[in-house]
Length: 158
Image (cartoon, rainbow, N blue to C red; front, side, top):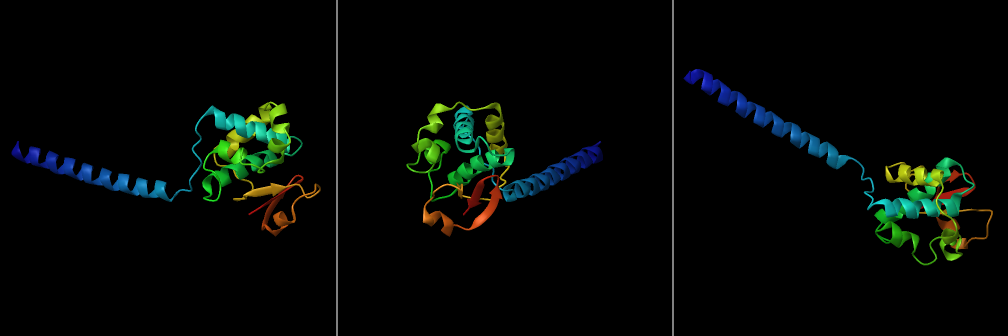
């Protein structure tokens, strides 16, 4: 009976040891994964969807997701506000907020889906912090940004 107890204790110690190793390995793998923005709720989806509708209504779906991705890339960047609302309402950041278009349109079903996709990690811009339409009058400064992608009528850069 004593040998059986000893074997059970040894087995239990081995299981605990191995589960600790598995947990350690899992935590290392999870720490190495790229960070995905954790949104603060429905208000972030709503704000992103409104901005998408106002800035990229006529753009292809990837272009809609790209606009939201730029906002989220800015949230993660130390040079910008650290909230979706802070980035969207930063003075002069988005033409549609400045000219009132943002306020005149409600989100479409597609813009809500695009916001959701961006919030869950899809970034067709590969880290862009800016976007602009080269057919419109823009600051010369924006052309000094490194161009990363072109989606629809928008150019995306860092």
